[in-house]
Length: 154
Ligand SMILES: [Zn+2]
Image (cartoon, rainbow, N blue to C red; front, side, top):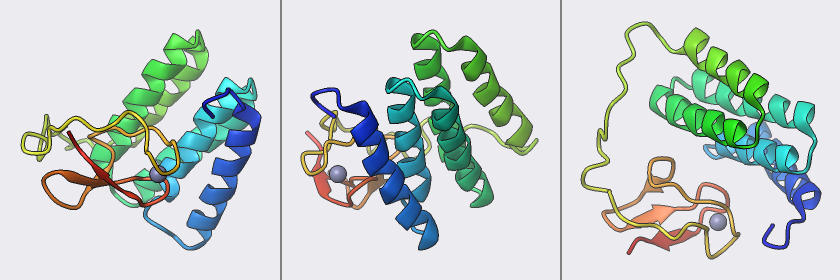
């Protein structure tokens, strides 16, 4: 990934995601989202969009609305930054259509105490880390969403 091998990285994440989906593993949605990002960076836009929608769909199916919304909004921002405004609109529409009417975004719900600075990428697998997407195992330790490594916050 560091050297820009996006098709290879996309393939690797897609395979990890497939395994996680089969096992119904907790990391399946984020792995799908990451596979989608890599596909898009590799120029494989339609395939990337499929992965992104599948990843968000899994969050929705599991009722993880906070993660659904946070990850979805990040994807929208990233797509817009790539100039893919049409695709960004599609994801925005997915968010709007799926979020339950009563959903109130928890601004920093549980984030206050875990507002730590994580390394931008997992030292183990190189996957991107976001404080609001990872699972925190304690105050200063997060679990990498991709490989499960324990990552220490600063
Ligand atoms: Zn990792």
